[in-house]
Amino acid sequence: MEIKNQTLFFIGIIVLILGILIIIFDYPQIQYLENSGESEINFLKDMESFSIYQRLQIEITVGAGLFVGGIGLLVVSFLKRFENRLR
Image 1 (spheres, helix red, strand yellow):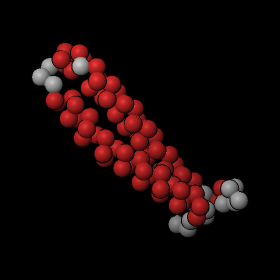
Image 2 (tube, rainbow, N blue to C red):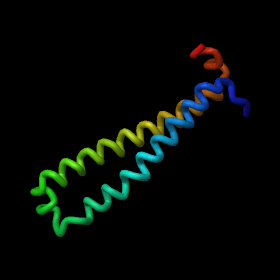
Image 3 (cartoon, rainbow, N blue to C red):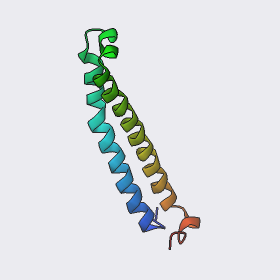
């Protein structure tokens, strides 16, 4: 396989790595918050923990989107018809 568009390839790698890092660092925090409360009722009552939990869920969703977007950019960088599209 030959890389047709090097710019897209490197942008894809950067976006992919950023998405992976977000997922790697947020997932253990979500697991900790889910397992820290004795019951789900106490967890929902503590609004500060719940708001942190919601923000972490949004971050991990964004990280997954970046991960998929990075893979998409890598695939597009190998296609011939997108060779000179960004120049």
